[in-house]
Every structure is written in C-alpha cells, then in structure tokens.
Amino acid sequence: MKKLLIALGLLFAAPSIFAAAPPAPPDWRARVTETMPLLGHRNWVLVVDSAYPLQTSPGVETIETNANQLDVVRYVLDSIGNSIHVSPLIYMDAELPFVPDQEAPGASAYRKQIADLLKGNPVEAVPHAKLIANIDDAGKVFHILVLKTNMTIPYTSVFIRLDCKYWTSEDEKRMRAKMATTGQPAH
Image 1 (cartoon, rainbow, N blue to C red):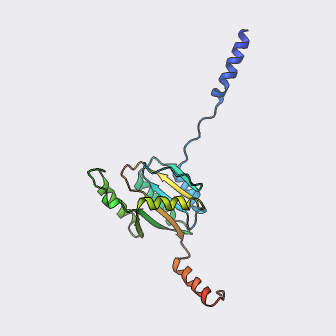
Image 2 (image 1 turned 90 degrees about the vertical axis):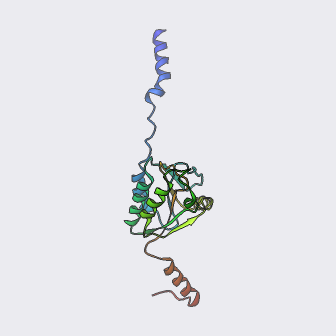
Image 3 (image 1 turned 135 degrees about the vertical axis):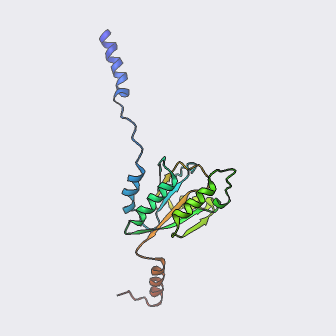
C-alpha cells in the first residue's frame, strides 16, 4: 500500500516536476534584426509607450522591450538605415506638443530629445486615434511590429511606416503617368 501511495504521489507530481519553464520573452533587438529583411513598404514598426494598447489585428506583433524609448527608436532607425530596401516615413501623435510637464513630468525634455533623434527625417503629426485605426487596418493585411517601451509620458509613440528605399513615390507617379499616356513598357 505504501508503494502504491508513493507511486500515485509521483504520478501526480510529475507534471509540475517535468513541466517546461515558460518561454523566455523575445529579445527585441534580435526580433528587429531578424524581421527587418522580411519587412517591406507598407509594413510598420512602432516604438510605443507603456500604455499603448495590445491590438488584436492578425498582423500586429507586440513585444515588451522593457527598454528606454529613445534607445529603441535609435536602434530601429539604425536598422532601417542599414537596410538596402526600406526607408522610414515617421508619424507621431498630434497631441504630444500639448502635453504639459505639470501633468506629465519630462514631456518637454522628451519633445526635444525625440526631435533631435528624428532630425533629417520627415515627421508627420497625426491624431492618436487615427494612427491606431491606421495600424488596425494595416494589420489585417500587413505585418506590424510593435515594440513597447518603459516610457510613461502619454502620446510619445513613434509610428514608422516603411517605404521602398530604391523606388520613390515620384518614380511610381512617373511610371503610372507613362503607362496611362503611352501604354508602352519602359525599355
């Protein structure tokens, strides 16, 4: 009887003894590095504050970085800059210039730091709700990589839509105009 009780005890304890450890959270730098060659125009990379919502569109992948937002933005922009195929189109919340330091300490300092970091890149201000709706729509068809940071100032998210580095919108317009007027392929 004693052996039976020991055997039953081991049987019931086995799942907890042999259970696999929970998977480690993904390393966000490695994920950016491995994903960048796969991403193309119309994909997005977002570097967001800690309160950014977890979206459910099928193409939206969210990773908690637990890192400084400016460091993550810098890493992502460097990764894009080192790619041969994509360039950044940057969007930020239109609300950010109106966030006061009294309610969100550090907002003014962040605005200056992010402006310095994004210098030389076109940045368009868009209302936050519209940006989230755009991501929701894009996530139905395209991959969106969301990198959550430890930022605790509202409206600080950086939305980066990837564009083709070697074929500009002007190139596309010229080609479409030629197609419409001549119907002849380029040689």
